[in-house]
Length: 233
Image 1: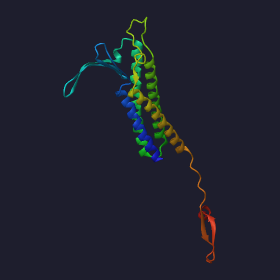
Image 2 (image 1 turned 90 degrees about the horizontal axis):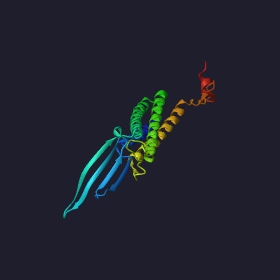
Image 3 (image 1 turned 135 degrees about the horizontal axis):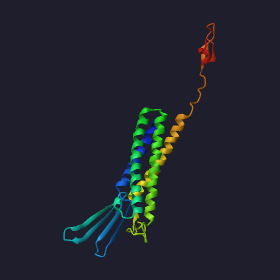
Image 4 (image 1 turned 90 degrees about the vertical axis):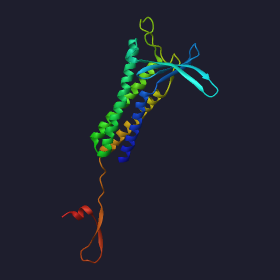
C-alpha cells in the first residue's frame, strides 16, 4: 500500500505540472506571411492572444540578422465580443482551478503517504483529485469549443471573433498538456479509489495455528492441538 501511495503521489505531481504548463504555453498557433512579406505569428493562450510581426531576413557574409517589428498582446478581458470574453475568461479560470486543485491533491497525498493507513485522508485526496480532473476536462472541452466556433457574427455590432480553426490555427502544446493532465488525473483518481477499497476491506481471518504439546508421562510422545485450545485454562 505504501508503494501504491508513493506512485500515485508522483503521478499526481507530474500531471499537475502538465496542467500548470498548459496555462503558460500556447494552445493554438498560426504563422503566415502578410502582404509585406513579413512573418506574422499569432498565438492563443488561455489568458490572452499574442501577435508577433517579424522583420525581413537580411543576409550578410557572416551572419543572418532577424529583426522583430513588434509584439501585440490582447487580454481576454478586453475582448469586445461579450460571448468570446465570457468563454475565454471561463477557460482561463477553470485551467487555473485545475492546476490549483492538483497542487492541493499533491499535498494531501503527501500527508496520506506519511500518515499510513488513514481512510479519511485518502478520501479527501481522492475527492480533490476528482475535482482537479473535472476542471481539467472542462478546460479541454471549453478549449475545443472556442477552437471550432465563431463569436459575434453579423448582425452583432461587436467585432467578430473568428474561430481559430477557421483561421488555420493548429492545436499545439498547451492543449495537448491539458489533455494529458485530464487523463493523468483520471488514472490517479481510479488508483486512489482502488487503494481505498482495499483499505476498507475486512482483513481475512487467520486460521488457528497448530502446535505440538508433549503428552503426560514424559515418554517423549507429542500430540497436535490448536494453539487457542492450548492457551485456554
